[in-house]
Each structure stands twice: as structure tokens, then as C-alpha cells.
Length: 201
Image 1: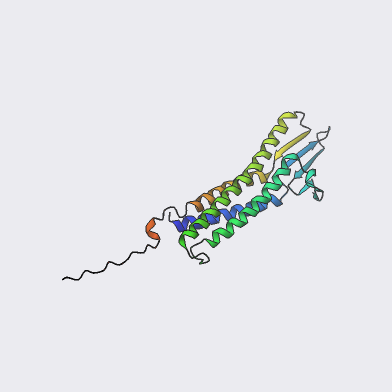
Image 2 (image 1 turned 135 degrees about the vertical axis):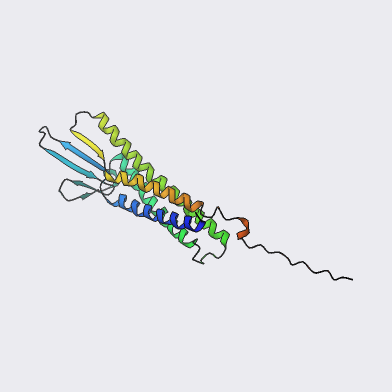
């Protein structure tokens, strides 16, 4: 695969990861809590997100403060917002360092800009993976501690999308970091002084 193709593919995967991060940040499907009454026929479902919580068919209610969130989602909100900011900066750097834009005329400077964007996407992928995996583990541990089946917590669809998003960001960042690795030193302009002809005496 050529360096240009790796750059385009890495940027495309990173943009998809960026959209996925926005999706998991907005939708309230991080956790699905099922509350069962003493009667088996009565149950209530709660959808928990980073910004709002929804109870069945009731309208969603936003949190008054970050302290109202579950403990594992308090840090998740901060990390996901930071990831979105980092990904946006990574997209800007990747576009600026692309081959078709002459904002940075020097090829070596373009290489460093694209590598920096790849590092940012890789960091953003880790920032997305940390809260997603933590929330998943806490959901499983909660169900193992409470065996009465009155309150059951399931991992929401956003955790699955979050895992995919983190993988796309890390893969896209890796492709951007190595998009110029195949270029050899002959690509850079090297100046040679022209040898003076020696006149025969």
C-alpha cells in the first residue's frame, strides 16, 4: 500500500471514529438498568447515558450536576469530551499535512504534522477505550454482587460502539503515523554542486 493510500485510509478511519465518539457521547445507552418489582409482571427499564437518563417511555431527564452520574460515568464524560477535542485537532493536523494542500510547503514538516495527527488519534482511541471498558466491567461486577435479580444492569449498545470506535481510532492513528515511513531519503531534495570542468593544458 502506498503512503498516500495509507494517509487517506487512516484519515477516513479516524473520521469514522470521530463520528462514533460523538455518537456515544450523545446517546443515553451506556447502561440499561432493569428494575423488577416483587411481582414478575411489573418491571421498569432505565437507560443511562453521559448527559441524560431515561426511564421507559418517560421523557429523558438531564443530570443537574456531574455528581448525579454513577461513579464510573463521571470520569467517562470527561474522557470522552477530551477525546472529541483531541480528535478534532487530529483531523485538522491531518488535513493540513496532506499532500494536496500546500499550507506546509516543506515535505519533512508535512511528515511531522501527519505523524502528530496520528499520535493524537491513537491517544484519543485510548481515552475512549478506558471508560468503555471500565463501564463494562462495573456492569458485570454489579450483577455478580446482587444475585436477587431485582436490579440488573446490562451493557448498553454504546459500549459495543465504543469498542469499535476505539479500535478505528487506534488503527487510523497507526496508519497515519506510518503513512510516510516508506519514503526514502531520495524523496527530499538534495543539492549538489556542479563539478567544474578541468581544461586540458
